[in-house]
Length: 628
Image (cartoon, rainbow, N blue to C red; front, top):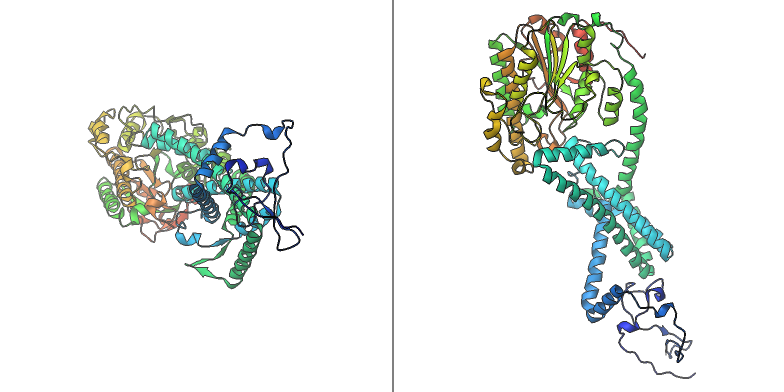
C-alpha cells in the first residue's frame, strides 16, 4: 500500500471547529472545550497512518451559514485561550473542581446547624452515582436539560436546607413549605424593628440575590459536570460502577468514618421529609378543623362560667420569651431567681400569695400568637394553619368566657400590635389598646414599641384604675423581653413614667443589638436582664395598684431561641397565679403547684392546652360540650 508522510502543525484559533461542528463528545482524556489536533485516520495496515485533512476548497463557492461572522465574545474567548493555554487550562480545571464541590456539597448539606460538621461531607451520596449513570445514558441535548434540572433541584434543596437551619435555630422546627412563607415577611419586619429599615431592606435584597445565585450556579455546575462525564464516557462509566459497588458494600457492612455512615442518601431523605411534612400538614388541617368544633364548655351558659370568680378583677398577662431557661440556665438563673424571690416577698408584704407550675408551650423561639391561642383556647395550636382555623371559628377562649357571663368588662393591652387585629373578637375583648392607643411618646427599644413599665402604667390609667360598675378582665402582653434584648429599658419611678419621654436617654445609652446578636453568652446575659425587668415591672405594678379583688395569672409564651435556651431545650414556661383572697388559691390546691413565683424543678408540667379546662373547672364552671 502507498505510504503517506505524516506531519502536524500547531493548531491556531482559525483551525478550531465551529461550535456546530464540534462532535457530541470529546476524545477520551480531553475536556469538551479543550483545543485538539486534527484527528488521525488509522488505515487497516497498522504501520500506516493517514492524517485526516479537509477536502480541497473550490476556488469559489456560494456563501452559506458557516460564512457568517462568529460572535465577538466567542472569538475573544478563543483568542485569549489560544494565547494563554496554561491559564485557560487552569481556569477550566478550577471551574470543574468548584462545580464538583458545589454539587457534592449540596447533596451532603444537612438541614441543621448542629449537624454542620466536616464529617458530614466525607461520604458518598447515592444521588450522585445515580445522576452520573443517567447523564451518561442520555444524548447531548437531553443530557444538558437533565443536568440543568438536576442542578435546579439541588439549588431548591439547598435553599430549603438553609431555611430549615434558620427555622430550627429560631423556632425549634423545620421550615414548612405550605405554611411558613408568611413568616418570612414577619422576619423582615423583625429585622426592621431591631436593626432599622435600611438593614431590613438590604437583608431582603441579599436573600433574594442569594437564592437566585444558588439556583443559577447550581444548574451551571451540574451542566458542567454532565459535559465532563460525556467527554470521558468510558472512564466515567467505570468510576460510576466502582462508586456504586463501594456504596452498596458500605451499606451492607455499615462502614463509618468519623462517626457517620460512608454511604448516604441524605438529599433524597431531605426531599422525602419535606414531602411528608406537606402531606401531614394537609391531613392535619382537616383533622384539626373537626377537633376545634368539639368544645367541653362550648354550650355552657354564661351564668355557669367561672362563678367562683365573680367580682374579681382578672388580669391574664403573657411575658414574652419567659421560658424555663430563664429560671434554670446557669447564666440567667441567678438574676431572674433573685427577682422572683424578691417579688414573692414584696407581694407577701402586701398580702398577696402565689402558686407556680410549668406549662409546655406549643411554640418555641417565636410565633408568640401560637402560645397565646393555645393557652386561651385549650387546643394545641402549633402552626399557622391551626391558628387561622381556630381564630376563624367560635371556639370558647378563656378570656371570652368572662365576657359570656355578662359580668365583666373585657379589654386587651397589646403594645406589640401595630396593624389591624381582627382576632380581638375571637379573644372576646370589648376594647383593644394597641401600640398607638396607649399614648406613648418615647423611643422604641428594638422590637418592643414601649417599655413594660409604661404599658402597665397606661393600663392602670386607662382601665384598671377607673371607677366602674363591673369588674375588669384584661389580657396584657408584655414585650420588653422580646429578642434581640438590646437595648433594654430600666425601671424608673412610677410617678416619673409620664408619656414615656423619660426613656429617651435610657434607650440612647443602651447596648446595640448588633453587639450581642451573634454572641450567645452576651445574649443570655441580656435576655436574663430583660426577663428580670418584665417580672419586676409586673410585680411592682401589682404591689402598687393591686386590690383585695385583683387576681393575676401570668406566664411565658415560649422559650427563647436555641442560641439562648440551648440545643434540645424543653418547651416549658413558668406560670403563676397570684391573689389576696385565700379562696382563689385554695381552689387550685390539688394542682400541687409550688408556693411563690418560682416553680420548683419538679413542679407539675402540663401541656399548655390543658390549662383552660383546668382553670374553668377549678372555679366552678359546668361543662356543656358541643361537637361531640
